Image 1 (cartoon, one colour):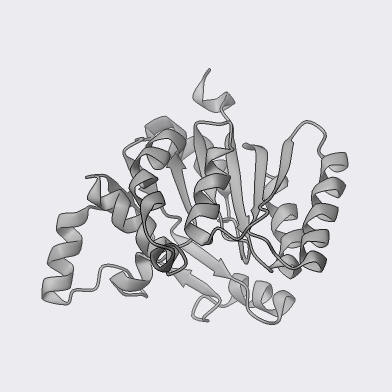
Image 2 (spheres, one colour):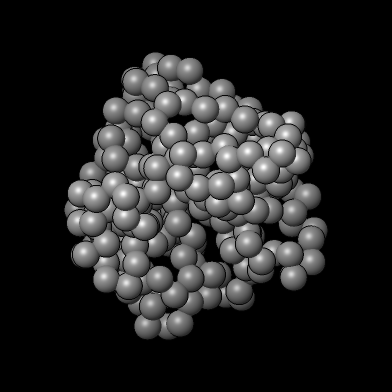
Length: 237
């Protein structure tokens, strides 16, 4: 399969975040490079779950050629395991995991086809250069994120490619160095949106599945980043 013909999966972990899901699905499914969306719900309230299911069924009819799956966890597994399972159920080699209260990076199709696929390194986990965050007022936050770069709704990490590993992290902690444009390393290590090789991710995260419930229900992205770096893999922004 040629790179230009390759698709990616999108994995969306959810927990009581139904107010964001319609806009997120709408943004994700319009992307030509996305042919699969796996939504894994970590035992949300019944009324929240109903919204997730309703949206999945609605978009299945609108996008019959795309694989849309809703996974309903019968017991709460915690955010780390929920993300793991969402990615595990994807069929494509490359997965874009995005938190349910965010929206995908702008220009995703162009980035996937022209930047990511031609030089994709399965040993790297890729963070988008900009993150768009929803707040209490969804419509206002979307507008602000697009038009006001200095607001809290848009977080700019880097305007150019930037790769780092655990040695760089160690040095930045020791010397209190800033390694992003607007946020410090602690924020960077907690990004809940990333693109990754499925098999490498699952293999690197196996150790975390044996951790205590206290760890699995804590800051899940810190754990993901820790295990990724521990396995001598790199992060690219």
